[in-house]
Amino acid sequence: MARIYLNLPCSTSNGKNAYSIWKWLFMGLVLLILLFVVVPFPSISKSLYSSHVNEISAELHYGIVIDCGSSGSRVYVYFWPSHSGNPKDLLRIQQLHDEKGEAVVKKVSPGISSFENNPDAASDHIKELLLFAAQYIPEEKHAETCLHVMATAGMRMLPESAQKAILEDLKRDVKKDFKFIAPDNHFEVITGKQEGVYAWVAINYVLDRFSHSALPLGHDTVSIVHNEKSKTVTHTRKRTVGIIDMGGGSVQIAFEVTDQDQIKNIPSPLISEINLGCQDSDLEHSYKIYVTTFLGYGANSARERYENMLIQETKSKSQRITEDGTIRDVCLPPGMSLSGKDALGHQHQFLGTGDFSACETALEPLMNLTEPCLKSPCSINGIHQPRIDMSSQFYGFSEFWYSTEDVFKMGGLYDYWTFQKKAKDFCSTPWNKLQGWYKDGNYPKADEHRFRFQCFKSAWMAQIFHRGFSFPTSFKHLVSAQLVNGKDVGWTLGALIYKTRFLPLRDIEHTNTQMATSWQRASRALDTQFLMAACVIVVLAAIFLYMKHLKWCPRTEDLKRVPSMTYFMTEQDQMEQGVKNEIAKGQSYTI
Ligand SMILES: Nc1nc2c(ncn2[C@@H]2O[C@H](COP(=O)(O)OP(=O)(O)OP(=O)(O)O)[C@@H](O)[C@H]2O)c(=O)[nH]1
Image (cartoon, rainbow, N blue to C red; front, side):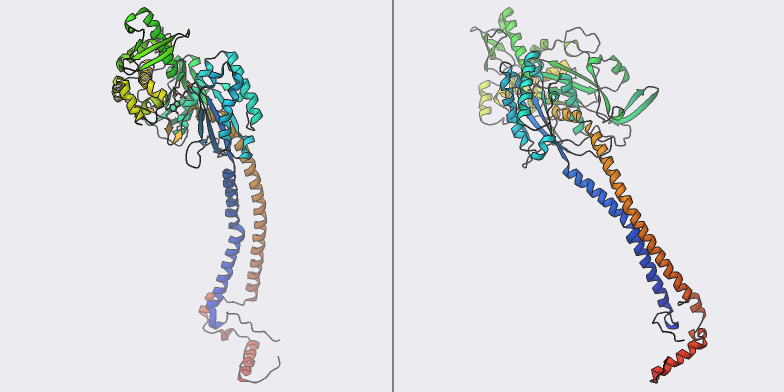
C-alpha cells in the first residue's frame, strides 16, 4: 500500500512546528469565538447607544411663554432635549438663543391690561410677539410646541369681566393665526403666589438645587423629614435659595421652610407644597414653600399710591405745598418737576427736593406695618412671615435688578450701606446735572422712566426689603440678578418647568418601550451568533479529535524523550523511505 507523504511539519526535524500549528489553530478558535460571541455585545450596545444619541439630538422640544406684565408683555422661547429616562431627573429646559448668542426675547409695551376698554385689539399686541418667536422654531415643530400666555399684576387689578374679555380675544385669534398647542387653559391670569413659586423654581433650577446627587450633610444641605402614613422618611438634599420678585404692580417673596414647627405655624394660604417630580409619590422633589404676594406693592404701583398719599397729605398739611400749589417730593432729585393725576383725574405738580433718608421714612406708611399681626412674626399688611434664617441665600429679581444695576451699576451681591450711599448721592444731585450726565450716555441701561424714578424706586426697594420683609441692614446674602450662569431666571422658566413636569413620564414610557424592542432585537441577534459560534466550536473540536486519532503529531514529551524518529518507523515505512532515497538518486519505481 502506498502512502502519500504529506509535507506536514511534524517530522523528527520540525517538532516545534507541530506546536505552532496547534497554536495557530487555538488562536483561530479564539478569534472565531471573539468574532461570533464577544464582538456582537459591543456592537449591540453601540447600536443602542447611537440610536439613543440620535434620538436626543433629533428630539428637541420647544415651548413659548408670554409674560403679560403690568408694564409690558414679553415672549420667551425655550427648548429641551428628550428626557434622560431617569425618573429622578427633571427636563433640561433652556432658553433659546439666536445665532449671535442673544436670548430670543421680545417685549412690547404697554401692558395688556391697558386694553381694558378695547379688548379686541389685545391679540394684535400678542401677535407681534408670536410672529417673532415662530421664526426661531422649526416649522415642523410648531404643531407640537406648547404656548402659555400668562398675565400678572396689571390684569389682576382689572375687574374679572375685563380680564375675561381680553383673554377671550387672545384665545380666539391666537388659535386662528398659529399652529402652536394653545388650549383655553393655556391663557390665564396667574395668581401672585403662582408667580412667586415659579420664580423660586426658576432660580433653584438654574442653580442646580434640585439635583439629588449623594451629598454629605453640611452647610449647603438640609435634611427633610416626611411623615408618610406610618413611616418617617428622611431625605438629605441641597438647600434651596429664596426669592423676592418686585415687578411694576406686585411683589412676591418665596422661600422653602423645612422646620416642622415653623411649617405648622404658617396659615395654609401662605404655604405652597410643590412637587416637581413626575409622579405624585416622588417625595424627593417635594418642597414646602412659604410664598406671599402684595398687589399694589410693585414699584410703579407704589409710586401711584405714594403720589396719592402726598396729595391727601397736602390737603391736611400745607407745609408740603409751595406757593404755586406744587407738592414737594423728597423722593425726586432736587429741581425735578413732575406732573401726575389723582384718582379723580385732577392734575398735580410735584417738585423734587431729593433726600433719600427722608424718602425712606416717607414710604413707611405705604407698607401698613401697623396692621394687627394675628400670627407673629408678620411682614407687610399684618401677613405672617416665618422667621428667616440669616444664613440663607436670597435672590432679588426685576426691580431689585434694575434698581441696583441700571443707574447705580451695582447689581449682584447687595450691601445696604454701599447701596444707601449711592442712592443718597443720586437723590441729592440736582436734576439738571443728572440730566446732563444722562444725555452724555453715562447710563446706557436706563430708559428715561427708570432714570426719573430711580431715587423713588431705590428707596422703595430698600424699604420693602428691610422694613417690609424685615431683613436686617447687615444681611449679606441677597443677590440681585437677571441672568444667573448666563441664563435668564425669570418666573416664566419656572412656569414652564412646572407645567412640563409630567412630560418625563411620557418620555420614560417611550424610552422603556424603545429599550424593550431594542433588547428583543439584540437578543434575537445574539441567538444567531451563539448558534454560529457553537457550530464553529463543534467543527474545530471534530478536526482536533480526528487529528489526534490519526496521531500525525506526537506529543512534546515524547519528542524530547526519543532521540530519533527512525525508531518509530515501521517496516513498511523503512521500505518506503528506501524507495524515496532511490528516487532521489534517479531510479524509477512504480508504486
Ligand atoms: N431697564 C429695564 N427696565 C425694565 C425692563 N423691563 C421692565 N423694566 C422696568 O422694571 C419694572 C418692572 O417691570 P417687570 O419686571 O417687567 O414687571 P411687570 O411684569 O411689568 O410687573 P408685574 O405685572 O407686577 O409682574 C417696570 O417699571 C419696567 O419699566 C428692562 O428690560 N430693562
